[in-house]
Length: 387
Image (tube, rainbow, N blue to C red; front, side):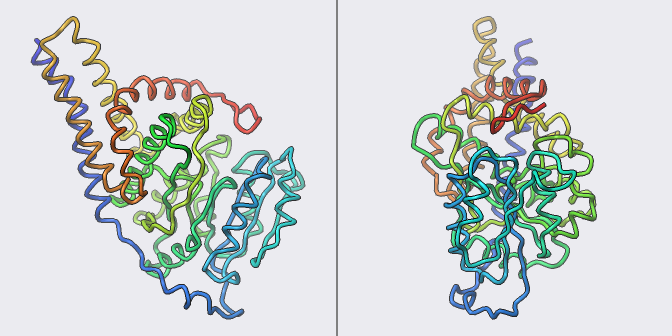
């Protein structure tokens, strides 16, 4: 009997390890675009066409916006080639005033969502309001609390120049920054795993996840799939649901921007409570997934972690399961380390590999609790109660 239970215990971790090995190969195969010399990029003439509309949905971001706008002002892509649209989502601070007063070399427009006829509240409504006024063929999205490399937009332009017109959506890398505390290291490691998994899944042409803090899409492709229609009632998911719709309508049209200059940095949640609120917000969209690759991956990750927890809990009553439980733990741990090693090297956070065993111990109860809270629905985000 212990053999059958042991094999059952080992099944999900074994399937998980096989999946991680496949994703590692997909990560390694991701192309890296070649950026043009910075000097050449700065010699653009006034007649060059507008390439990007950078859209930022902001709510109560008066403290963060000056830093982001300063980063955008330092972009090596000529200022004539991009515009920035900031949508103030009913802020209770001076977000709109700060944004409008900031001196920048590029075209900047500040939109008050409260003044847009018929507009709802929330990020999707803010993005829709900006899209209605955007003039460039490509939309690039980031968040108001992010920091950007000077070649951020140039890296998007380099990828755009290298690929054909069949590409309609580009996902970029995001890194959580903060003090080297236990909480930040574990949350940053978990987030790095999500970024790496999303990138590798795109490389395998089975896109599962991305992050709205760093992505781009063609404006006409957004219109072709009716944008957020079908999930506009959900506060979260402005990024992944759109990617899934575009992949379904235009197979092979999704890319990941694997370049260090494309990396967007954002501060990680400062407290455990803030971390849980953020993760519950993300988990709230899982029950609405209709994308089979995303559903299968989410179930596999959950089953693998539950198998580890079940093996540990069963040992006092079934000590014969010890070799099977140990094998399951080592199999999953090895797969995680093998997959995360190049991802963390890309993010310049290889030191986080030491935290993988700790995260593996904590992940099963953490993921189960967050998943259940997400299924229940309801959370508070930026002062709003969301259902």
